[in-house]
Length: 330
Ligand code: KG4
Ligand code: ZN
Image (tube, rainbow, N blue to C red):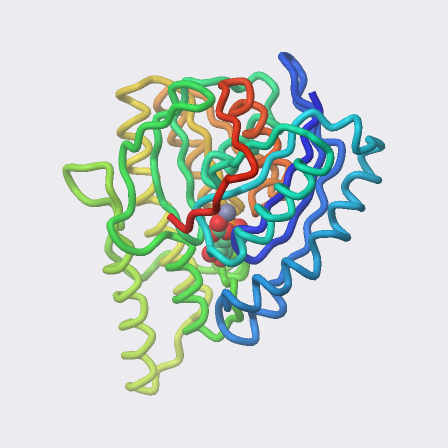
């Protein structure tokens, strides 16, 4: 089955064609245009600018994705699009385009949850992966542990009560003089630092929930105090210590649930690109005696191939939409 899919929930526009069938999970094309450079000027994503940039990019990307896949419009079986959660104006661009395409080509249409799409990136990367498993979604907007009981059934085991891990990386990175998004820069800096600064754990005791606001404030206070005293900070050490606190807090909760459930762990979302997080979670899963899956970095950020993969399972489960489909910010 060929799926033509679209992603426009935040600051990446993407169109893809994937081939999905029992035993087959193949990316035929996956075109992404990032708006990062535009938003970097403002220190974060500006929703109105994001919507306009999606409008400018989406037709050309759709054309390119179809051309690169070698498929024609008539070969497409289903159209998939992220319709929740995300920036409402940004989502509406992909949703409107997908609706127009599905209507004009007379194809079925499925709205896809962005978080489930991030999880589905691992289906594309690991042909043997199937539910049940624990999915850890760590992105700019989410830090959540799910029990995935089937391709379309999710149960929240633990989640952040305030900021997301990616948001914390971005805020602390900006204070250290980096440009948005700061996660990848923090990752590189941390590789050359010592974990010699004590920061609080984001793992809340007695639950599988997280809180990143205390950790973020502690890092901000550390930087401000050093500045007021005129002390020079070792940026590498701050990045290494902050990253260690984020990653070991996440690993603590993940380890707890893996030891209890004895099912594989799937790491996904933009922060799944973090080298320290990938390493510590691989070790955590190994210690718990379970398997660990994470997509390649190219599939960790927002892309339409992951949307197409999840669209297949939604379609097979009968979760099919029509021309009245809407976008939802939550
Ligand atoms: O999933 P994503 O592309 O967009 C959302 O749906 O939020 O995630 C973006 C987030 C940003 O906060 C970015 O700083 C973070 O992922 N990120 C990283 C790394 N690469 C991207 N965080 C830590 N280490 C990285 N290597
Ligand atoms: Zn995302």
